Image (cartoon, rainbow, N blue to C red; front, side, top):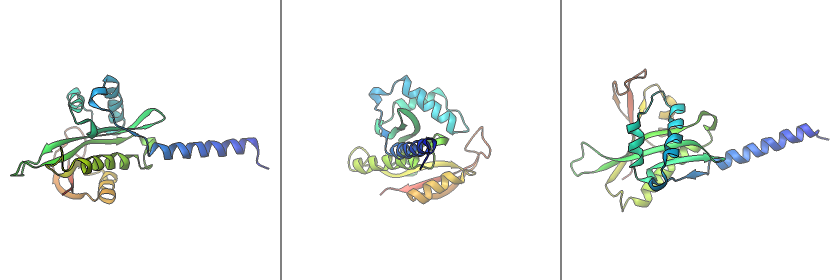
Length: 190
């Protein structure tokens, strides 16, 4: 007969697994109208925990101006555990005024990685594109991200899960981290 402590361990494990599975599904979409200082602080905390660089106030002020469907949080038990910030930007070499989605940041707190949360965030951006590709995103042809050359996990994530292609090397892209070089990863959407 199982002891009380073994039953307690079992039910705690079940509870944890259920909540981790739920965390994969709980993506909230803050809008510009409700993007308050509170959300800015959450995004800052996630970015500080996930990235080797600090983003200045201008970054967070720019995020407030983005299409609310391109900046999203992943929540678990009411706390933000991940975020993606994407913007629409012109493709410089495009003669027809075409544009792209640019992933500025994608971060998931370390304790919540490898549970599909980053994938859900990226997928939510792609799904939004699909819903608006004939509307307000009709000029968007691709999605792009810069990835540090040493960040093999990120490159594998984008290439293997989403079909991004590894493009050109950009030397000295980063100013305060080593190595300072990155690759451009792209996925054609049209």
